[in-house]
Length: 130
Figure 1 (spheres, one colour):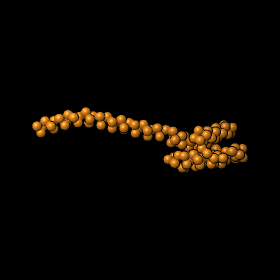
Figure 2: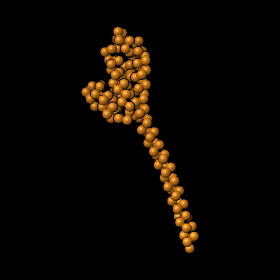
Figure 3: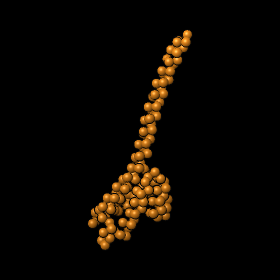
Figure 4: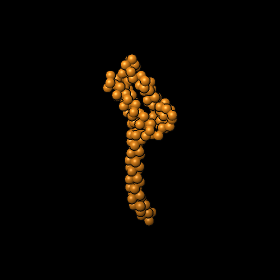
């Protein structure tokens, strides 16, 4: 039980730190989560809504009488949700950027090849006319 309490506190702290890092506005946890949701509309709202409910599962409910509501499956769900959100916010945009850069580089390489070939093609067509 103590490991579960500690793990839930760590998960909550990680979420809190995410809202600080992302400069989420709001006077309380719920408002900060809403701010995070507004800041990242590309992240599935179900994921961020799940984070909003960690407060229902922890806070004053981490006492022995509340364990039926907060178990290891609930903690695992929160951890997986947090991992998915972090992936969407920090990994996916960089992957998209890298794909675009790769395609731009390929496109530039092809355009460069055409510029090198074009004068030769023009010369041969001039020779055919003359």
